Length: 302
Image (cartoon, rainbow, N blue to C red; front, side, top):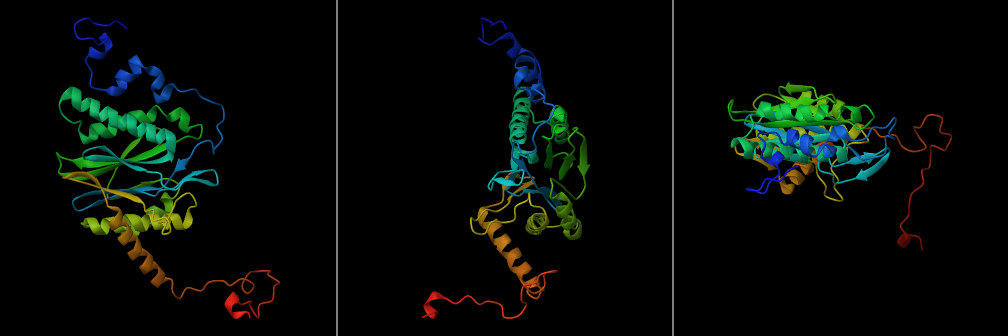
């Protein structure tokens, strides 16, 4: 690479072009995701995986959310991983799949959008951002086929249409604009059922946040890779709002209040649900069914 004398930058740095990805691929190709070595087989528990993420429309924008658990095989690798990020001031990306690769993709995507805006002097359109993310995912295809997939959701405020829009992807880079709601990750089948049941047109932001939490609760109820709210450690899902004012996270206090409300409601709903008792209802259990033991406090045993 030749250094120019007048401005002190290599020639390649002064070449025209608004894509950071193209620039990096030309001048530092080894940092690109698609240039990493391939393997015949990769153990499934070689890296933490994250799941589940959801997004839904409401009257004035988009709600995007993710639980906080990452797993390695049957082990909980992280309890506070972040799966929802600002892509720029008016868009967001949520990630499911191989955590390390997904976070790297998010950082590269943020750089790509920032680089375009600095070079062109104007932000990329929302469709343009969605397409750039699709291209980046396509470069990960060989890793996805070896068991290291990344499945993001992208959402943002479209200033030309004056509405929020959301996009789902597959591991091949396929881009699908979704009306109303979408979700991804191993708990998505359960989260989608909740979204189908609860989502309605013209929701306000508060109700949409509650629906996102309900969907994650349902996913955590049936999917071991998805975390429910951790009341002891006070760890809540991460939720962000994107509207005409831009991207912002929902506060911890609001999330705690919404989770407490859902917990109270669900506990009321399950108050009279029959629960099997040990030694009484188990099929084939030969233990006596009568005279269950009672734990006596030490203070009362004298």
